[in-house]
Every structure is written in C-alpha cells, then in structure tokens.
Length: 204
Image (cartoon, rainbow, N blue to C red; front, side):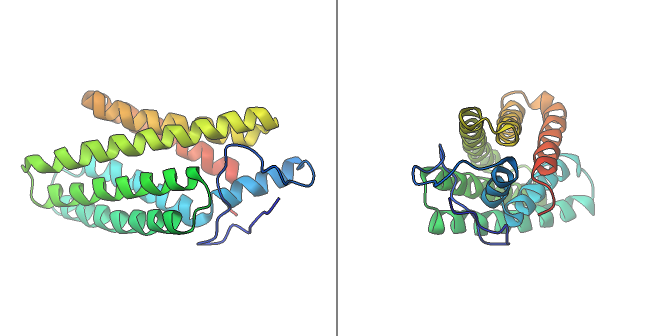
C-alpha cells in the first residue's frame, strides 16, 4: 500500500476500504501514517482556518473587528478553493472528489459571508451561504462515516475516532443552520471535534 509523506500538497487517496492490492496488513503505526497521508498538513491548516472564520464571523459585531473578520473569511475562502480544486484535480477516488466539493462549498459560503460582513443586510448572502454550508456539512458527515466504517472493518481505532470527529463536525454545522439559536453550542462541538481529530493525527 502506498503511503505518502504528509507534505503540504501531497495526499494519499481517501478510500472506502483498504486497496485490494495491499501486500500485507498494516501495523498500528503504519495505519496512522496512512491516515495522516490522507489528511496532510495543508488540509488540516485549511480546516483550522475554516473553523476560525466561522467563529469570528459570528462574534464580530463592531468595527474594526467586523472588517477584520471579513478579511479573514475572504482569505479562508481562497484557501478553501485552492485545496478543493487541488483535491478535484488530483484525487483518485470518489471520496477525494467529495472532499473537494466540500471545500469548494465552504469557499462559496465564506466568500458570501465576507461580503455580508462588509455590506450587511443583503438577503442573497444567506441564500448563497446556507445552502453551500449545508452541502459542506453533508459531505463532511459522509467522509467521516466512510472513515468510521473502514476503521471498524480494519480494526483501526484511530480511523474510527477520526471519522467520528468528522461526523460530529458536519452535524454541528448542519445543526447551526437548522437551529440558529444553537450556533454557539454547535461551534463548541465543532471545535472539540476538530481538536480531537488534530490530536489523533498529530503534528506531522
């Protein structure tokens, strides 16, 4: 089985199961290396930016923080688009493409949020941002669920917990859209799920 180094733009393809051509079962350390290769540092950095932008946009209610949050959302939109396009262009599996779509959806949502922060009161912002965020949430839950299923099949606890964190993160985003009053609680759950996933994957 091919295991890439977790470098900035390199990633191993995300799959529903271990490739059939795997020559031998992987030990726990190699399983974790494989998981890290599927979640390289660039992907985790973009995820952290997305989480920060989501929280900042909800909290920035006065100048100059509103403008700063808008700028942060704009940068996050560009980073999300770059990673999403990269996944779509170089992905080898359906799950890679799902991840690419998720990042492009979030790019759209954060781009709209950036405009909404600078020019509030425009109805189209939510009409664009909410469906894009809902699509991203659905993709995140699908990706997390795939990791949970594969992890159970392979008896890979790190993959199971990483997948569960992804499902929780996607569900938290979906909840904030359906129940706006629960946005703060949803953000707390999403932060905890991201921290858990980052902790499992480590710094490499």
